[in-house]
Length: 242
Image 1: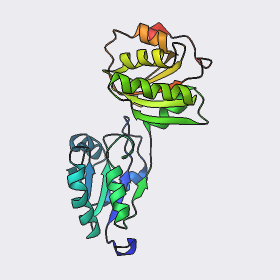
Image 2: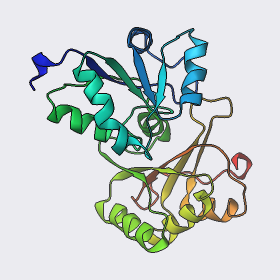
Image 3: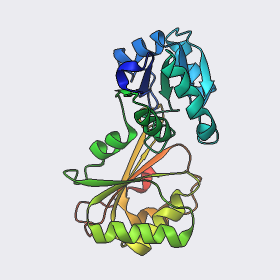
Image 4: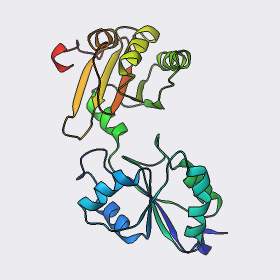
């Protein structure tokens, strides 16, 4: 099947990472005009849709069912369906479901239309104040200690600013791992709850942040920006911000 033979349309739509006003006019128009929205969590997507009085039908599409539902949804696109794919926040495919949909769509001759928007990745890089002419993105670090240390050693050896996502339940352990694998003086910026009510940007050295925040009950969504350059771009940690 060639692209010209596909009757429907597939949109990969970026949604806000927190503040519901961080969505483009184009994205709103697409969400209104498509016939179906494949959402990572339909309940979270409905919050956005209700806010903008969008009545489009939604269907669940997440990491646990994407292998089963991708072919089904793309068959509908090939038959004429206009489909939008969204994740809970940000852009599908970036540490979120969507890659499989795009890959299989391209195989079928369906060219996805990507509707860009706000990103927690670019937000964190811009807010960090760390070198950003080149940086590496690692998504979520491995949970197991040995694999996590190996990735952090790779960051150390590459010498470039690195961006990772992290669960609030593992922030303390990850800070300690950074201090051990890269160095206690490593510059780290924690971006918590970006664009949301309790947005917070915490800057410091890995060793100090790990010590001060070791017993802290971290909450929220985190992006960590790491500069392995011996802490030269790093201020001292402010205890009041933790």
